[in-house]
Every structure is written in C-alpha cells, then in structure tokens.
Amino acid sequence: MKIMEFDRAPNPRRVRIFLFEKDIGIEYEQIDIAQFEHQKPGFTALNPLQRVPVLVLDDGSAISESLAICRYFEELQPAPALLGAGAMGKARTEMWQRRVELHLFFPVTQTFRHLHPAMKEREIPQVAAWGELNRPRALDMLSLLDKELAERPYIAGEDFSIADITALVAVDFMKPAKIERPDNLPNLDRWYDEVSARPSARA
Ligand SMILES: N[C@@H](CCC(=O)N[C@@H](CS)C(=O)NCC(=O)O)C(=O)O
Image (cartoon, rainbow, N blue to C red; front, top):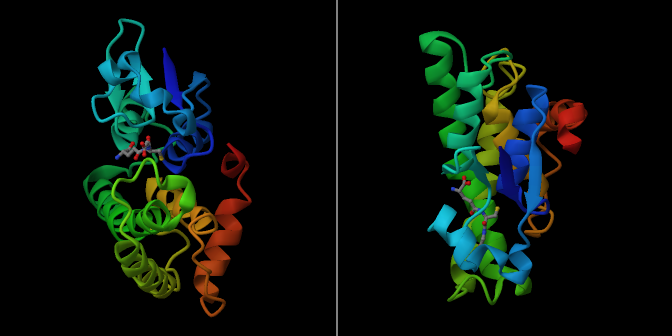
C-alpha cells in the first residue's frame, strides 16, 4: 500500500496530517506535479482526473479524493475519530468539513491557481478576475469561523477533526496564494495557534 502525492501541495497535506493523527505509517511516493508527472499515462490510469493524492492498495486498486482516502483509514482504524463520532457528531463534522472545503479551501486554491505565475501552464485558461473574486470569499469565511470559534474549541465541536485539518491547510496555503490573514480575528488566531502547534501540522 502506498500514497502517491506531492509534498508541496495542499490536498496531500490534508491526508498526511490525518494519518499522522491516527499514527498510521505508510509509504509515500512523490509525483512531481511541477514536472507534470501526474499527467503521464501510468498515473492517469490510477486517477483519470490527474490529481494527487492517490492511495494505491496492494491489489492495485486506487482511491483518489483526499476525503475518500481519509474515510478508508477511518473505517480501518476508527480511533481517534477524525470524521466525527455518533450520528450527530458525524453529521456535524461532515457539515463543517464541507463548509470549510467549499468556502475556504476552494477559494484559497482558486486564488492561487488563477493568479500565481507558477500555475500558468497548468490552469488553462488562467482567469485573473476569478482569482481576485475568490480572495474576499476566503476572507468572509475566516470571519465566519472566527465567530463560530468563540463558542467552541474546534471547528466542528469539542474535538479536533477533519474540518480543522482542511481549515489549517487552507489557512497555511493563503501564504502562497498571497491572501493576507486579517489581524482582527482573535478566536481564529487562538484556534490557529493551537492546531498548528500539534505535531501533525508538520506532517
Ligand atoms: N478533490 C481532490 C483535489 C486534488 C487536487 O486538486 N490536487 C492537486 C494538488 S493539491 C493536484 O493534483 N493538482 C494537479 C494539477 O493542478 O494539475 C482531492 O480532494 O484530493
């Protein structure tokens, strides 16, 4: 079993943090997307969407989509529960995971993909106006999260979860996306300092 990934990209980092939190060791193989290795036929056969990460099982079957990979390991090893516990906990965690992915992670990555010169040959066409449009969307979601985090320690509730992982990776990716983190969000700052101090944040 191995995970094919690119260690500078945000989606694979979500999976690495998830597995670190679960103390699951696995082989990682680097696919250099800057060198278009993910567009070669061998990798395309594993993921026709040509995206990392991809989990390859010993029987050769492949699972892509970061959350699907996390789900696979959560089923194999439920503790610690990072996708929520119980009907309500699982639903709340999925609700926040989706909110964070759609309203923070996605706008941040779109800003990067449509404005960063390094993405010119991979995001075709690069639409600068779309990149600019996504910057305030990401900032709006940070403000919303700041209000939510006044009520509880973590994004989905009392426990650290995949929603925190997706948000942490998104906030860190604001740097290459050149989105400045506002300095008037104290609850977000408290949460960020805490989650980024976890050893998994360095995974
Ligand atoms: N929805 C996918 C997105 C995967 C994705 O977009 N991966 C990026 C790296 S973070 C990628 O492979 N990009 C290749 C490219 O842009 O050509 C997931 O959750 O895994």
